[in-house]
Length: 435
Image 1 (cartoon, one colour):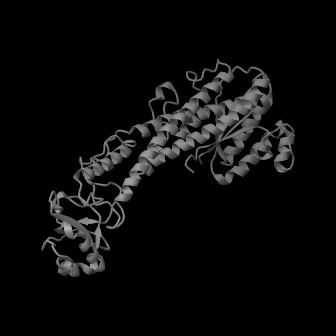
Image 2 (cartoon, helix red, strand yellow):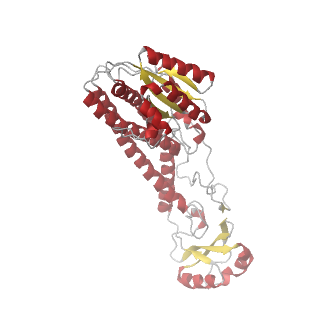
Image 3 (cartoon, one colour):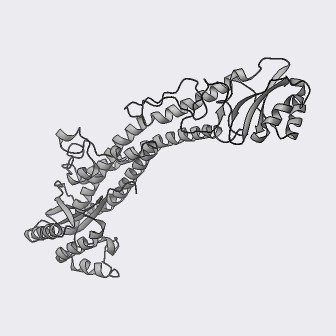
């Protein structure tokens, strides 16, 4: 399971024996794997300040968990083509002993081998300063996350808008990746080339009649340059003065003239814009992205079934150049990995602080408690595990222990619901960040 229970009990002889009984029972019954959870001795300050910190840490805990879940989801979105590798990028690097800082540490290993980072969060500082440091760190990460993901969303939206132009049938899609300069009569004062969409069932009729649809149609000037499931795109060259008459006669025969005039500069601009957006989007994930030819009409990720004809050198829409992928990471994915790790490590430090503060408030001064991390072996065992803990530590708070059996009993002074309150200090750590 990816769920952990972080609990604490007083550190006196009686309760240490209770912890030992808990370890024996949970081990024999195969309920959970238990390890000590080391928390340093902090400067306690006043109990009033601890009460305020308890509330602040609760809010910070919720915020941190929400933040790392959003970052995990952002990794999923950026790695849309490699979602199977998402968990490989959700790590807590540099969070253990100095000699292990270069290793890739999975989240479970970090939690089960947790060590307080004295360099980043000095335990000798007042608790309020430690909490403030964590809060500012997470707030800065969230600010950066918002700006970076917003920029990525704009990039995706612009790309999707362009990609929409490359989908659909011959009536609506862009033609810039289908036509070529050779398909048209250009720079002529008298002649013009039109594009006509002809249903597949009418190909023969078109070939027989297009020259007679109007006067001044150039004989044998038609050519099929592309087709989809519904029809084909034909060229036809005629004199400019009969354009309107030709359109009317063509429509009467169910041949539709597509409004398109070849503009080399506009076509080049559209192709380059698509290529740039594809490259920018891919580079957010990986720096060595798909190698697109400059000015290519390749529209990656959208395979539109329109087949250009008569020019083998011209790529079909959706046809991709050979990919050449390196192993470098793009800036957004790299930032997400580094800062997810930072935020996750901060979150577990917040959990440790919550255990410390709640233990002092619950068990009093001087500070003397033992924190233990439990990892339930399976979901079905959690109810039995809870019963064992409530039985072992019932003596710590008889009212709370009784209220677990009767949810209608209210514990004066507690803001938590009775379902969240137990005789021992308890906090959950759930590593199911993508659920």
